[in-house]
Amino acid sequence: MAFDINEVVAQMLDTIKTTTEDNWNIVKGTANTYLQDRKSRLELLASLKLQNQISQEFFLSRMADEEKILESELHSIAIITKAIAQKAANAAIDILQNAIMKVVHL
Amino acid sequence: MRTAITIRKIPAILYLLFVLASCKVMLVPEYSAQLEDQISNAAKATDRLYINMLDTTQGGRVYDNFKDQYNEIEVEINSIQLKNEGRPKNGDFLAIIKNLKDAFAEAKKYHKDHNTLSDGEAIAYEATLSGYWKPLYLAEKALK
Image (cartoon, rainbow over all chains, first blue to last red; front, side):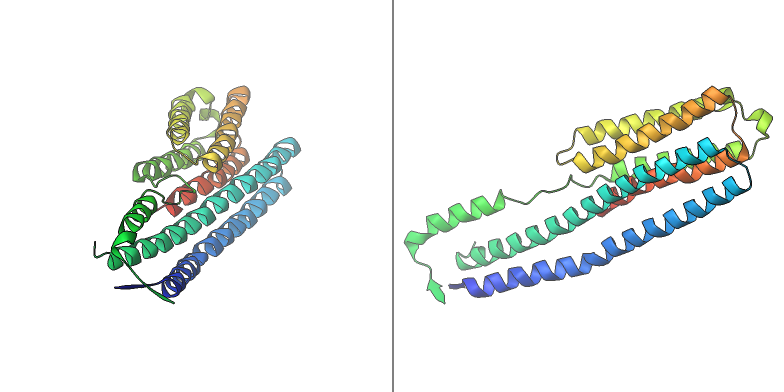
């Protein structure tokens, strides 16, 4: 049984590409969800302030929260991106491992 | 280029297989269905806290009437934090949980200090705290 390293590397790259592409929509969808949520919250807070249902101090506190929420959202997107990279890398390693196992008939 | 495998290369290949098998890339913690449920339930409890408040007149919205619910949620956040501290590659998760924990503690203290909340304040806290829970929930789900 022959071992064609070029073919294996091509398959590994293809797997990385497919896994990344398949999961990229999750990152895009999540970022979009966060943007829409932020828009809704800001509209709500602005309307509560304009109707004097919350004080200026309370309003500013919630604005400070928005910065922290953005920080959490960025951490969340970092986790999602790393999870995709992990899936892609492990799928590529599996291909290499399987190719070697086929060669040695394990 | 094709390379024929000879007998003398087999130990090297077996060694390579062993290395590959034990060398999985790990950038994030392993998915936990139990943690996903716990996050989802605690987020629901936070939502329920403010929905219950808004269902009550402002006079009945005194802190003492809601302190048990606040404490239950705080216990859940602490438990989620503890479980995440025990996971490898937990840096991003711990940062999200710290923001959530600080925000919830501030909301609880505000209610305790003022004894009651206006409709506007309860509505604003409900929306803001939901914004803190969502990144944690979506991040855990992404580990699946």
